[in-house]
Image 1 (spheres, rainbow, N blue to C red):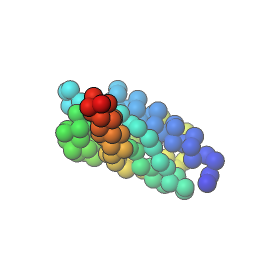
Image 2 (image 1 turned 90 degrees about the vertical axis):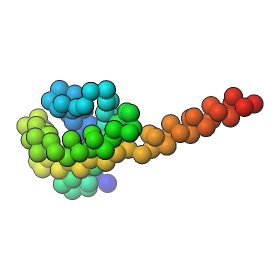
Image 3 (image 1 turned 180 degrees about the vertical axis):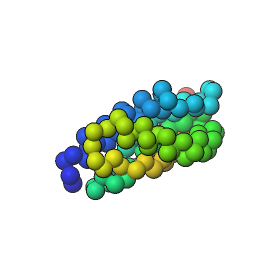
Length: 113
């Protein structure tokens, strides 16, 4: 594995977080968090995992992110001094909701004891 990949993942996560926070109009009452980034070995593509709260609005957020992908990619290209800048692919993080469900089940079993 290229030793540069983890650094690129961290950099992409930080920069995309700033872009989402400052430059995008996200729906009111929605919290979007970038949970992790996985850049491909050749740095041509990066899968960006997002968590959306409330979870019921994740489809709406994904549609908005896909609609704005060009402007997000342009902002990222301007901010980063690296070539190539990976193409962004959005993915809804499922591990977060799975972890939350497990927590709820553990709490429930504690209460039943």
